[in-house]
Image 1 (cartoon, one colour):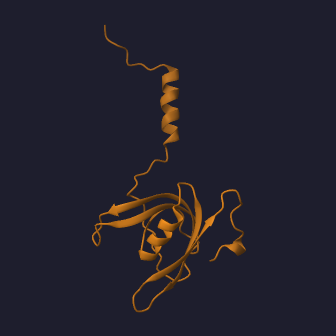
Image 2 (cartoon, rainbow, N blue to C red):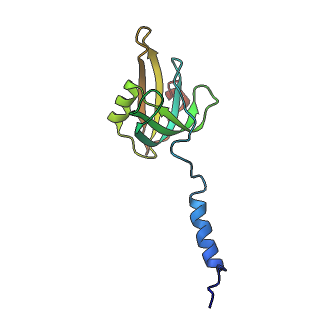
Image 3 (tube, one colour):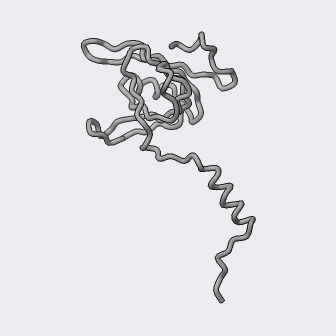
Length: 139
């Protein structure tokens, strides 16, 4: 006797609800890259994950952070992006030990003319509090 491949309405509902939970699933390594290139560039973002040992054309042990940018000083950029970590950014993200869902403000404060070293400021936005008022975001 051949088993029927027709699913009951309950089975269909169960499979749809699981798919609905993952409808926004995206690859971890296929996000657009966000680069801090101008002094004063700042973002408000939600931390998604930190990835280490990424192989790029330049580096075989690069680190990157995937974040959902909520607000950007360019008033255009938003959504999920990958940010490759410079020396200073790596230090910041290692120090803060962000968890998935943490909100933060990150700003490029200066670039050394001789070495090209980028200096950043970062602040964690408290979960229990409301997001900073416009006057509190350092754009």
